[in-house]
Length: 81
Image (cartoon, rainbow, N blue to C red; front, side):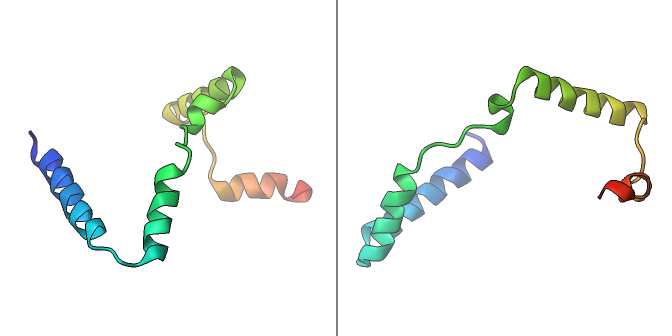
């Protein structure tokens, strides 16, 4: 196991020890709520193919240097903002 993995396992054990000693019902209820929360999905998996293509195009523009500073964009579009 890598050092990072060992640290995570050590943290888990410390949390388990802490939880087993809890006597505060509010804390226990909050932990239960945290456990039962629905798993969040990555936003990338929830956007459309068109939105992904737009993000990819924007990243390509950045790599190619086709960008403008925020102050220039703000000045250009200030009449609509």
